[in-house]
Image 1: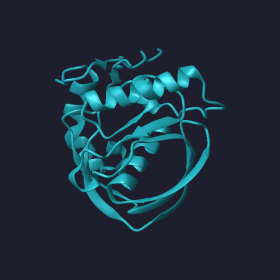
Image 2 (image 1 turned 180 degrees about the horizontal axis):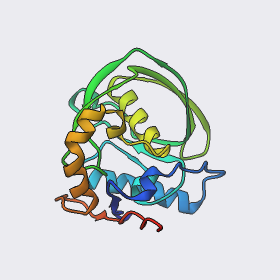
Image 3 (image 1 turned 90 degrees about the vertical axis):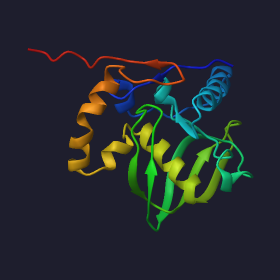
Image 4 (image 1 turned 120 degrees about the vertical axis):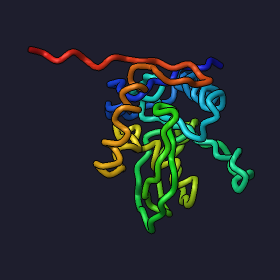
Length: 187
């Protein structure tokens, strides 16, 4: 297993909608293992493929380190599709691609999701609380959406200078990161 570098805010791949996976290959299994290793190295609880520079519609989740979720099993979620959302909860979120920034985000409290597992078998789960939040956060990533997009325009404006520093790599992390400058504007 390898620790993969995490792409930071401002990297185009984070705004790219990921592509469905047609089948699980040895390379897919390796990516899954590397994503779990990377997520754990960074003390994260969820990681989407585009956060490590890939365009596959794949995410991994492990919330078992959280005190109230000790029994939770790690999840591999391929080609997720949200079937239902219910309720609302506001909680603070952070992101490995946007280190040092946390803010409250309102998301559905309960969800039902259809996906394929690491064996490419169809699965459907109902999730609530933290698991639902993490899955929704990571599915957002797969669709090119960041948690900061859910904040008010005022909050985003207040974070602008911090986000600019992150996009330049002016941030300290205990995990490897990639800074990709935005494409140059055409004249």
